[in-house]
Length: 396
Image (cartoon, rainbow, N blue to C red):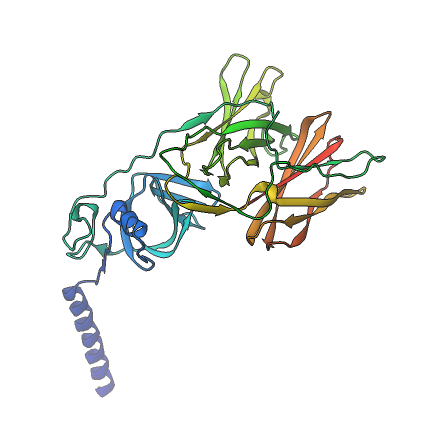
């Protein structure tokens, strides 16, 4: 009886504790910044906001950005996650900033969601102009700048391609084509928005490779590459978007694809490589594939920007190793800049009689300044017939 009585007392004590918790209410996390504008203003003022809680409206969601899952909260606010955050444009989000980094005039913030938060008297909003008063209004809707489209085409005459070309004929030696516009080390650019004329990005070359139809469905995969040139002398282009459109002979749209890159340094050229799928029956002889580029984010303002140019990567010892079971294209890449690069996107483009017949990319980790690393492209099928291999690279 005593044991039963003690059990009853224990259960009653637990119930009293639960009721007490409900009576007191669940503690909520106070929001430090009530909108994106106030948060960005504090960042621009040099404040350390790591660990701070911010509420904002998701203006755009870019799941395929070079940085990861990118939620735009303003023209220069990028909330980055390595996993799908289950956020869509228009959602009001509350997060805690983990790490904050300024790159090319934009803020990149890793974060964790805060599920139970509230505005307090100390919450800072744009309307409160940094004071302790609470504005109370929902975060304002930022609007990003308009797009600036570049002309597309295949004429690369006069453009800096930043590629090393290797002849694959058996009686020729492998030589690199030097880039006369390359600079040693890292170049800094002082940007004055009052005098800089913003020029649109240009598509200087492109190509595609159509694989075999899938055995699982009616689709075929199209690999493609597009070379994007930044003609500006002192403006860095951020997040260029390559736009690929497939049209039927009657003008109907058969497929569209967008691929977002990272940055293009001034007077530099990057190579973007990706793929898309399309119904095999749609790829008839009269189908056309067109390439274009858009970018509405150019670094401006009186700031200095450091970055590694594509032309600061050098290639050597590129060769093919083919067998009955697998084929390889191998080589070495050297980082001739003064900056360590965490990850390098290395691309190869195969040409036959100057026409692009194949493309592929791979990644090299931890390429320190002045150091050299090997790379290896592997393929179980034969390489398409080609006479040159073009190698290029860009920071990733």
